[in-house]
Image (cartoon, rainbow, N blue to C red):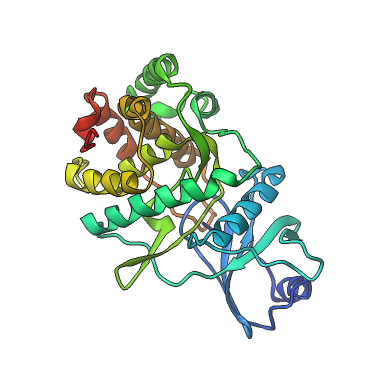
Length: 322
């Protein structure tokens, strides 16, 4: 989330005439994240999130994202529900950009991750995967192996501005992962961006999952790999096997991993590190200075990638082989 597009009071009032959610009380920009323009919207009918979709999000994918949130909310996954306008559509336009309003979820992300947070996350992730099993639309993962290569090429040889020798290292990792990337693992709908700021807790209970704008059809175990990176490292880039064990155990209590998924876990976690390293490298170099946005340090994920290069066995991640 971020603010790239400012909207005027008159624009907002006119836009809300397309909905039946009352009159505006307040509308404030949200600076977290980097993908879209987001506002916390309060009306006489309640609280909402207003999103304007920026250039990185393909407009052709928006019906998929909004339909997925509708589907998951209907399956009791705690996620935002798109608000339909008077014309029956959840997708509209504001300031010349696609826009949507979704329901507001109570709670907030956590900065002090505990073992219990990881346990609740593992359970929720498995439930999400099962709930998505009968969602028939599909969307390929544009940020899988070939997408990482595209990101690296778009950096135009500037990667070493972040750290000397980094570009050669990333090229080597990309080539190695491309040759080892697994195939024929169970696939389905994955969130693909389930970081702590996208999971809300209220009174220490998981209350919501947000930001489905990377959701796609890919290997279910890859979603787990993303979560291991995002939730199971401390501030000094030390991997916490206890947190990982809680996450994986809770996941498997709902959906058990097969032998191929278990064997592939080290390469998937390494690939998930490279994926976020690459997008952070690009954003670090090219995010507009004037944008109200929080850039994320790419070296955090470079450190995680280097750690994973030394891991070969899935039980090193706290996985209990069943």
